[in-house]
Length: 585
Image 1 (cartoon, rainbow, N blue to C red):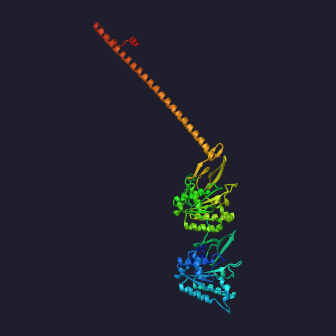
Image 2: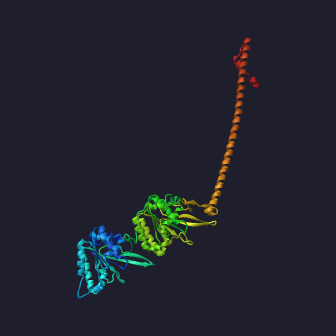
Image 3: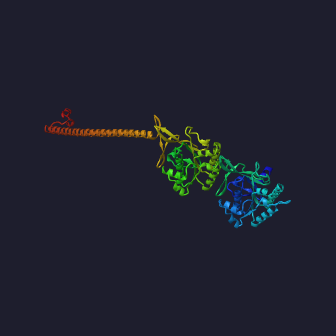
C-alpha cells in the first residue's frame, strides 16, 4: 500500500462526533473530532454559546450522549431561559441526567492570588460532573473568562494546555468557546493551536444588514469545507447552508408540467415546462408577471403538488385578494397545506441569509414548485455580482432537488427587454418575456418565449389578457399595417368576421341558384322524355298496323289464286310489295 493510500485511509478512519446541527456535519465531513477538543471562536453575538449548547442538546437527544455545560458567565437559570426560545428544555434534560449545567463564577475582585497556583480545582469539578452522568460531550463557555479573573497569563497558558490535554485523555468531545482578538482567532492566541478543530463564527454587517457566517479554519486529520458558509439562528436552532458552489451533476427529468396557461403550454411544444427546470418571467411593471407565476402555482396545487412562494413585494393576503380578480383563489390551497407564502422585505436579511432561509424552508416544506417574486428587489441588499452568485447557487440547489423554480424579474423601461437583470438569463432553462404594446392610443400586453431549452417552442407573439377567468392568450392580428392588439385587433377581427359572413352568404346564394337550375333542367328532361315516349308509342302502332295490312293482302292474293285455279308461285305470293310499303302512311 502506498503512503498516499495509507494517509487517505487514516483520514477516513478518524472518529467523528456528529453535532446534529443542520449543515455543520456536512461541512466537517461527519462532525467534530471525537474525543478531542474543538475551538469555536468569534466576536460577541455571533452565536458561539448557542452552537455549543445545540451540540450538547442534539447529542443528548439524538445520539444519547450526555453532556456537561460549564459556563463562566451565565447561570444555569439564565442558560435555560436563553435557549428555551429554540425549543430546548434544559431543566428537563438536567432532570433526566442528560445534561449537567455548571456555573463557575470568576470575579476578579473576589480572587486573591498568592504565589504559584493552578486549575486543579477546575479539573476536579469538571471530572466530577463528567463521571456523575457519564458525559461524552463537554462545553466550556467561554474560556476568556479565566484570563479576566487571573492576572498571571504565563501560568494560565500552561494550565490551559494542560486542560486541553486532560480533555483528550478523558476521551470526551469538547467545545471550548473563545472571544476573537484583533487580527487573531482568539485574544491570547493559544487555544487555536492546542485545538484539533477550529471553527470561526462571524457576524458581519454590510449595508446595515448583518449576516452570520461560519468557517472551519483547521481540522487536524480530516478533510473539510474551507469556504465561508452563511448560517441562520431561528426557532429551531442553527442551520448552516453548505452551498458555496454546487456542481452540475444533478439529474434531469423528461416529465412536463403545465404552466397553468393552456395556450402557453401549447407554445411550449404542447406540454409546458420541464420538471425541475428554472423559468424566468420578465417584463416591465404591470405586465402580469405575478399573475403568470400564480397561475403556475395554481396548476401545481391542482396536481396536489406543494408550492413555496417567496414574495418580496406583496403580503400574502394582498396576493390572495388580487388573484381573486382573475379567478384564482389561493386560500383553499393554503388551508390544505399545499401552498405556503413567505413574504418579507428583502432588506430583512442579507443575501446569504436569504439563501439559508430559503434552503431551510425548502428542506422542511419539500415543495415541488418554488416561486421567487421578484428577484429584482434583491439588488437592494447586494451588488449585481453578489445577487447573481446567490441566485446561481439557489438555482443549482433547486435543480439538485428536482424542484421546478419560477423567478420573476422586473425590467426597466428604456432598456432592452431582452437583457435580464444580473445577467442571470443564461442560468434559466425557459425565458418568457412580457411586454407592453402601444397601438392606437392603447397599452396592451404581449407575451413571447425568448428561449426554452430542449423543446421546439413557438416563436409567435401572443396578446396576454387578464380576464376574470384567468389568463388568456390570443393571437395578435398581423395585417398590412403590422401587429394589432387590443381594440384595434378587435375592430379588425370584427370586420373580418363580417367579411367572412358575407362570403358565406354569397356562396350559399350561388348554391341555391345552381339547385334551381338543376331542378329546371330535370323538369325539361322529364318533358322531353314524355314526348319521346309518346312518339315512340305512335311509331309502334303504325308498324303494327302496316304489318297487319301486309298479312291481309297476302291472304287475299292466296284466296284469289285459289279461286282462279292459278299456278301459284308461293314465293311470289309471300313476297310483300315494295311499292305497297311506300304507300302506307
